[in-house]
Picture 1 (cartoon, rainbow, N blue to C red):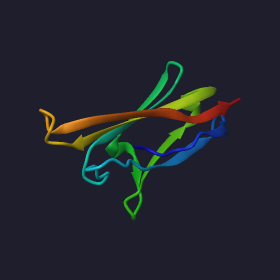
Picture 2 (tube, helix red, strand yellow):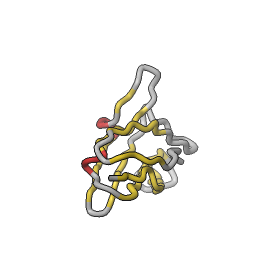
Picture 3 (cartoon, rainbow, N blue to C red):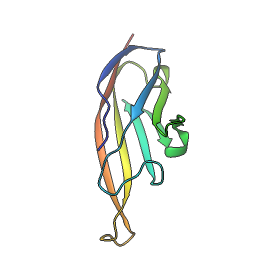
Amino acid sequence: MATVIEDEAFLGTEKKYLLEIKSAGFDMETDDFNVTIKRGANVITLKKEDLVQDHEGNFYITFDTSDLGTGVASVTVTAYVPDSDFPDGLRTEVEKFNLVRIKS
């Protein structure tokens, strides 16, 4: 569904990652999604409108590692895929993976 590779950064680095969500019937431009970045008890929650979008329509996750602290930060991407087979017309897809190891 989403593609981002694990990375390393020093505490205080501001990071920027391209987010690509691929699922049959899902369009990042028109459909809703959100992103949660977590390291321990520290959490950054981003709605679609909180992400940076470039002139080509690409979406980027941006954050300051100081907000998370040292250790491995994971990201959870939740996409709401239009699907008439579900009562609310949406199929929720969730993917979680390690994003960055933050070092002191």
